Picture 1 (cartoon, one colour):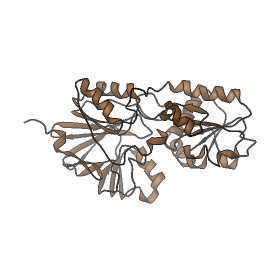
Picture 2 (cartoon, rainbow, N blue to C red; picture 1 turned 180 degrees about the vertical axis):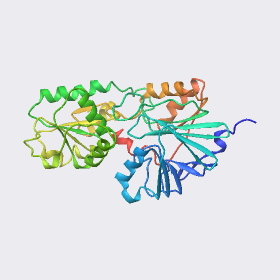
Picture 3 (cartoon, one colour; picture 1 turned 180 degrees about the horizontal axis):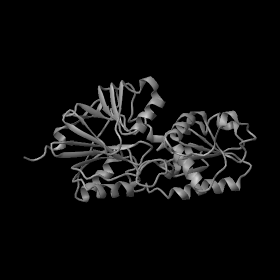
Picture 4 (cartoon, helix red, strand yellow; picture 1 turned 90 degrees about the vertical axis):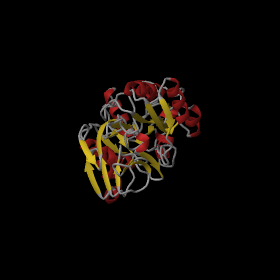
Length: 340
């Protein structure tokens, strides 16, 4: 007897992607009775689900962000462990996106689907690397699903920041970074490049930086920017949410060099519109070469593409012999539009 095709047991509903034989949603964008959550970004991990299955790190992130609204019951599942929900075996594999990020592996009656969540393929010192999992259907993101998006080496971008700091010692460099994932990755990459001076952080980054350190990610000395004087931060690096770098908050710094770390900084017009003097092309999402390489590495005969430039990746995949189609999910990619 042949295995059931995933189209017969996975459905797109207003709440998100629904698994019929397990009676759960994967990354629902509104509260549901049972949710399997791939990672802690708010467009995937919503508050107030009745029951949540996620990695221990993702649950810790959800508690830090949502507190009592993180979910009714929170069940941790480590990478490689298996949990039966209804008739479906669920496990997690590393996604390489942020700390705790996972691909959801669903198996039912001999059929296996892997839902990538968000992922990247390059090394990240803050989280385990993406692991390809063979499957019948691979559900992939496509945030940067256009050939123009080829991200440079992280080290090159971090060295641009350090070179600028050396050239302008009288100015404060304020770096826009998303609070979950990007902030901690930029900090760790600075440390790997030998930067051992204190880093100053906006208050909005403090809680998640503290959590990362509690979970074993070493960030070095961090100082609160709001408690530091303008003179103390001259010549220093300050990290802040993207919304703060061109705001009144940044104007309290000494002749700030406005920096933004994002995959969207590949688009010069975006940098110009945001008043970014030093764009750093660093993303927590796969670029075009990583997306196409991943489809080849996973080797699933069928590919469903979500949030991003679905059409381009679907076209490429079909041309390579995959059966590919767009899987439009409401509410995906909202956070990524500015901070990916």
